[in-house]
Image 1 (cartoon, one colour):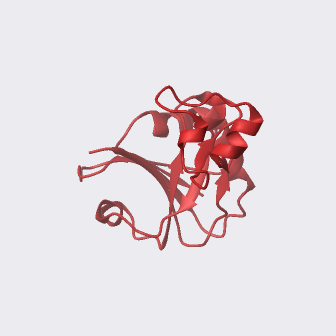
Image 2 (image 1 turned 45 degrees about the vertical axis):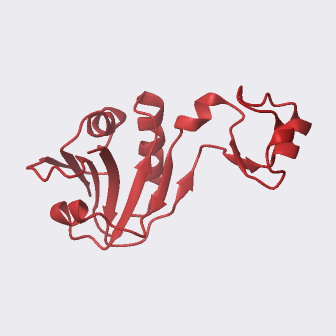
Length: 154
């Protein structure tokens, strides 16, 4: 089992990636002066291999929202919305604020739902609803910090 945070919607919403992730080669890493891992040198790696690189370790926890191509059965247990977007981020006030800003920038055509569930654990959720105008960072943090919660945003 693992925690799964997602947004469900009847309309497409934008994807976002605030992680500033860069995909670089070992050659580029060497040129940037990045320290190689302890178990090998940059020269020992295939020069065409790809390395995930972040300028700042803190960026790794930033908000990333991606449309799901494969929908877990568990998701359909909780919602019948057509579009599902995985939400990945660290669980803290900074990331709750990123989610809040993201949601407030969406032109809501119909309500969207924010879920935090435990996969393979189909249980009753704590449901709540809020107007987008009353939505705040604390509400979002409550959802993403916990599991078995759902928030409908109107």
